[in-house]
Image 1 (spheres, rainbow, N blue to C red):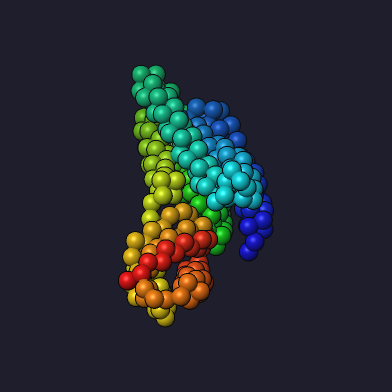
Image 2: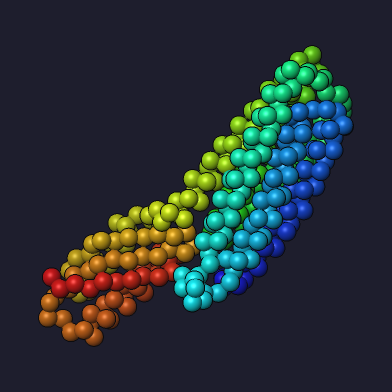
Length: 287
């Protein structure tokens, strides 16, 4: 798949997911405020943040899809990963706000008016979230998209929180309205955990954490005729945009043309056997 087609596909997926996420958010927030349920309102804001993260993704991916230029010789793909950091920041803010509102309700108790419509709304939105998560995760893995995978993790957290809200409704009907506030706090903690997971994954790429096991590269390089040893292997980047640099030793009397052929062969073999490698830099040393 070409880079242009890749980004067009990701953007199309995000528009679909954005519509579904905000449909779910509107339903939860509207019913949550009507019945005065802290847990349902918290879950609604969580779903709303799903949609907001899609907007961040659309902006980030639009920038990431730009071709290489003089100011960005390595391309713009990290902007997609950087936009994932935006999701985590948004989640931290929502987590704090929900915790603040929920804790204040301990001193100002409100009994939600749970009815059949409340359960039906939660079950309907739960079904949509399941479909969105599976669709986005499947597409993210097939496209090696950091953002789609991160966003599916966000939606997965929304599924857990929706199930918690349903249990809270059952507890309210059983005469335990305080459970509504407790569940809202649990939802906030779920949101915070998702934020940490996404931030950890994204920061690894942005801070040039090793992208793969260097022993795999060493095995490929040492199998090429003329290479005596391979060392100082370094990798960085996203799974679909890996940069590799390494040092090899060859015979000291090897002609420069032959050394160049070996260097080209190394790049060819690494790209052939390791999907996602964008660039390979080979430093040649005499033994």
